[in-house]
Length: 203
Image (cartoon, rainbow, N blue to C red; front, side, top):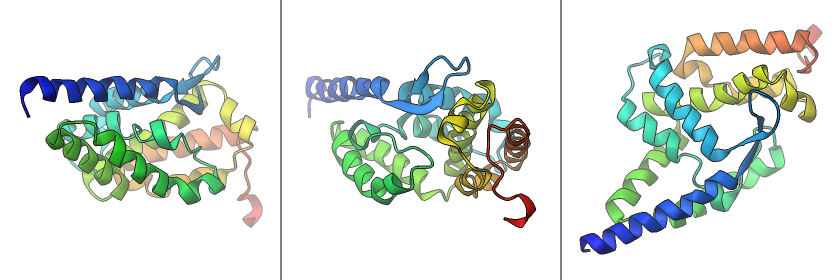
């Protein structure tokens, strides 16, 4: 493949992923005025990776974490955003996202496509220190936005404490410090009535 053909493939990919800017999530921006899109979410995670690296349980390589979080939601161009607490959508999420990964990362020159797809697979596997830390960021960022927006999305979806804890059952594996802080915020919003405490009195 000559340089011109390689550049064409890279630019085709770059233009394709522009669609990420139109994929809106269920989480509101901090000011609560509108919901964030996938591109904003991924940018936020990349900067958080740089700033919060010190709280990872294990040493992590930012040269892996940053492209991992920037690319982890590109599959949603085809697969769509599956809301964290959408149990029905979760049943087909893996299949939809694998199909999307083949097509989207396949637009790139083979070396770069395989590299990004491998990072996405590593993120999904949740086994390496980098993947665990990336998941911490992916899970805490919407929670921090929910806190900033006065629990707006939680209230709209009538989110329960058990749902938040189920989604975050592995978060402590990546950062015990951040997970402890997240739990404090959940308790705060239970007290404010934004999160339903379905675990009270042993229920």
